[in-house]
Image 1 (cartoon, rainbow, N blue to C red):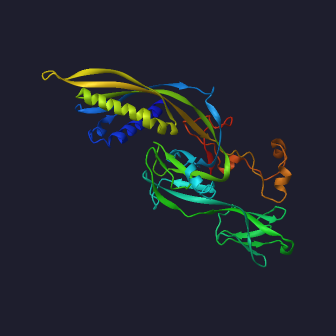
Image 2 (cartoon, rainbow, N blue to C red):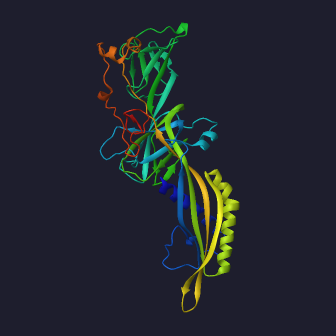
Image 3 (cartoon, one colour):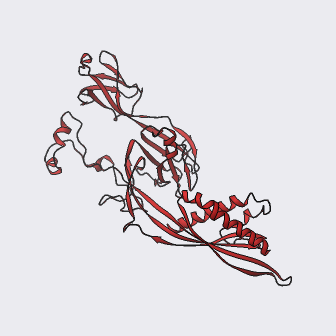
Length: 412
């Protein structure tokens, strides 16, 4: 973590200095000489070197635990397959700007968005990915057609996901006993009577496949906000062609992760090098004024607090003994603070699966596990459904649930 933070801080300051000096008419070629190390084949006429970074960790809690996170989105892992570790995406967050521009509502409909690192033809790729949404529909009023026939708003739904309720009263109906449904047309044929004159109607919950989107470009250490509007997908350095993951989008914010965090106190050491003492002092003064007077407030909004800026001494270095020519160096250091945070996703825990018969859930919901074991039911262990505990080697035991390894919820 320390080297990742210091590297990003160095990259940020190098970017800031290059952005400032690229508009200076007197030193147009200094930009390519603003670097993180002395990696020149030949010493340039002038340059800025961010040569060193050091820091101390400030612990804000005994175990770095900060609290729980509620979000519209959550990263999830799929049933593992060969050569598909499910680690290409490091994390998923809400896109606050997109939500704000959408009037405070999440811009994408709820559901599960399956992500596969492949092109539009299904060929594994480490450059593009496809998104296949499986959208949720909750409490949809079915349309009465005629006789015993009703119609869903969507022509198709995923088999096994339809739940039908007789309203009012919220009475759950059972497929094959109370109704028959066609997943290819969205048609429902009732096997019981509904008195529409008394205000009775049908309410449906189901999932249906949305339109696939992509291919979307990806890259290491890059984020994407277009693939799933409202969500930020952050790709790391573990991109695997053909990898498959999922992002779960909720209708309202749900408990999705535990957050661990702290703070780092960092020090950056910079050198100004030039062939002329006047040039060296001019570059030093303008760099210090820009960082402390202009960039400081902007960096503060990005979570980088500059605490102090200290000037060092000036030195001379022999460039040519025969010509009595020198390099002139000046140094300064920056003390700053930055926070770090890590979100460990929490997955849903399935404790029991109840049989889908009338009266079964109501009769068994109040029983203990020991009482259920003595009753002849259709309850099956979770393992028989292929649901397994996910495994991420970088966050073993951080799931928040005793005895569970990993970070992601398993989806089938």
